[in-house]
Length: 236
Image (tube, rainbow, N blue to C red):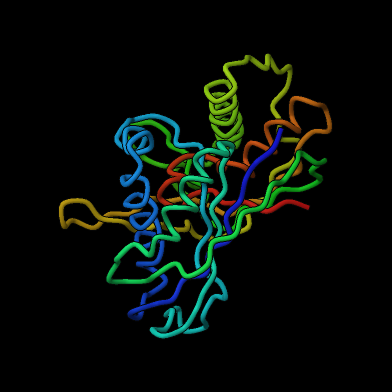
């Protein structure tokens, strides 16, 4: 297994608040995808997108990314063609009122043993009635474990067209890192709404299948709404 990562340096044309930053990056990537016929179709489908992205760094204390400064964000995917085509498109200096990607550099990461996963952006897990899992509203940890595992298994199967048939949940230990639910804001047709999620530290099991699922989480995001900024992880 491998995943492919773009490190993008963005020059900001205007101030962007932390609240708005996920949406600005997500829509920039979506617009870039729309310039490539194959991936425009993927963007419009209700299916796995196989990519994940981080927010801008460095994070600002006042939660405002400043106009005229450069910030970095990362895009990862299992799909090398997607990353290669996206890198080319980003370098064509897409006109955007918010920021401009001035550098995009690609890296290939081969599968490695993962001791711990840390979610950098909120992990979204849907439950009944269109709601999202939070400790306050649901609190069923087993349901959360199963939801996260099932989502990764489906992503792996859909991308590789292979069943893993795991015997156990890939999660050995999960630690909730936030006291209150975390949010990702976005908008559609001029109406703002948000996804509720959480930050986790996860210790995956050591067997081969669990490690493949943990690596899949790194490659295309843990949980749902990855194309909106959910579930970007780092590993230890």
